[in-house]
Image (cartoon, rainbow, N blue to C red):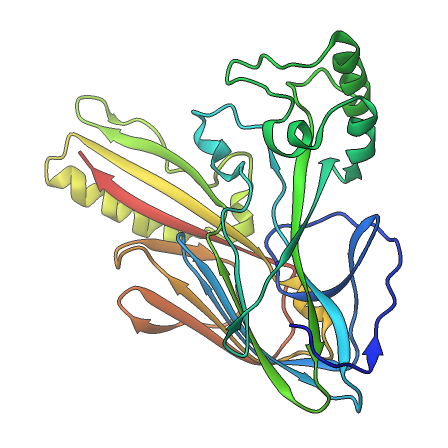
Length: 334
């Protein structure tokens, strides 16, 4: 989620807010307590091109500082919290730290920093865990050195305190780690700058085998990965029927088993409202893994087909919605 001469510095204070999922760049401030996101009334987001696939998310921005002074601030990029992953569960595919993050300003690579905190729900419990005697490694990486079988290195006292902290008898460890990528940025007066960043997305996954030879149609298609609501991606009758049509074509060809896999990618758009005014020119490009993949999402307007695997939405003076969830459906056979 560049240091040059500047005239205006935004004062840093200690404020903590919960971190959302993958998000638009937004100005922020860093302090001892963490990161909080600011509304900026001088910097306009004049262009944003957001490209989303199951392999990469790439965002290109053009920012314009409309004030008479250079502005130095912190640009922050919050990522989805990740938790203890015992492995072997498809729904846990999002449970991992960010593997890589590339950022450039005007074509030049820049160094980024990372903030981490442990959360239960929206509560920051980092200090509580440290006071229990857990190390940074145990909190942010090994989650109390828990094994796939659920055996952890906690003492009995620590286990009791964790249960009290979580307010439940749920599995251990009960916290997640929220990461935010950030960097210092100077926005020169009356001049545009270009910012690019890219990273592999956190991808949810689920699958079913709706048809099995000898048993017939035995299940429905997956409508959401994990405990998510299919309404978040506007899975409508037309999309559902298209998936069913592909299933039936495999059945008619005599295939023994038909699989339907759903991969979902979530991106927070709402922080794009933190800049001055609406986004002047906005483009959303969705890249399929292959042409036959079926896409479902909630987004205004009709897309233009750029090529066999790319759909593009375009808007002027765009006020972004809070979040975007895209379902990528794949129908295969065996």
